[in-house]
Length: 529
Picture: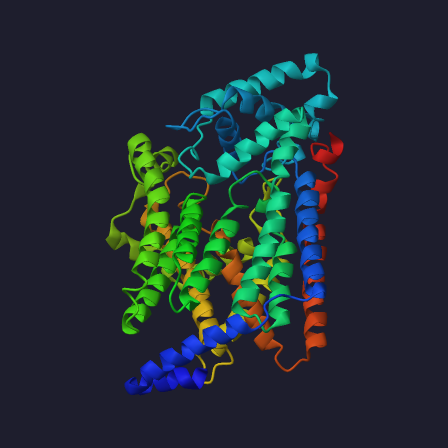
């Protein structure tokens, strides 16, 4: 197929023939039995269960409230459960405030030496109420005075789901810490869904490659991403854009996309936007990829026949997203809803000539930006006693492995005699476009703002290096990673590939246990309620 593509580029007269061959190839793929065997289905089911158990255990081990704005996300979930959509930055709701004050530990930001007597006090539920009441009242007053929920303008999809989960917990008569962890445990079934979606994506792009089909969901199931163990919308972003990725690929492959497929694709894109605004660069990448498809339809003379499908895609994507943008404009002053948050954090716009003075445009700064984003994409950015919950050597292993494996995938993609088929090359190109768009977006945000006295990002370290904000590209990233890993081990037989891959999974889970070990014995977590 790589030869055919190169010929089509050099000989325009062969382009109609190449389009015909593409259609025949698509039809052939549709005729190949895509139903996996019983063994593969069982393996995927086991991976879904392992992913859910993985998230459940670590979510139970981490006490409340983590440093990834968990209080703010929890407050929004409670507000949505009450049918309230915030219209401004507000203090926490009365219901959420009780949980925040009573169940939070200071250990994410403060070591024992910072506490009276040099020890972390026991949880309030293990002390007499007479003893802890003054401390709780003081903590409550501090939250009322200082806390403003700057996530109030965040898109609503996750919070509507989490709010429904909170109400269900109430109906089940859960209360206290059990109810709080019930909401966090929503991430476990979401992880099972994400693992299945990773398998579906691998099967869509590489239906003939068992190694890639299984390695994508396995990597997702064992990913040591700490943001999956907290209440936040990061868990839903890879699901919504992952679904969009699969449907966009299917839309691209279809010679004449159906209205049903187009509508599903548009709704998935809208859902990605309504989950988190960090998906915007991925949606821009999807828009570029779809425009490429429209150009192919026009070149093939089928654009008019596909007009109803294109209209359905545009309508289902634009109407839900546009409705939320109008809500933000009416209530927060801008279409993205970001203005009030930026003002609250104290950021200011820098004149564009000053952008070039940013340390990102130095080798050291560029490496820091890439390395930190890749490391935190794999492992998260959790702090424990104000120190990163990570091992530098493990960070380095993930970064080096990512760069090496992605380089192999890119080299195979760009080869004239590519080992990938035409549709696979398109899907991988889309994946790399998503990767580039995410990094470019956060590079732009890094140079655009003067962060003033903000803790993170700051003037001292003016970089967006939160890989969790890029989690929307999780499915396409692991498609690229699995394809590159397959090429890296191309000389191995299938059995050796899986043995090596199992070694990688063992490294992932064992290092995560070693890194997160301090939280498992913590007296504030679910195991000690």
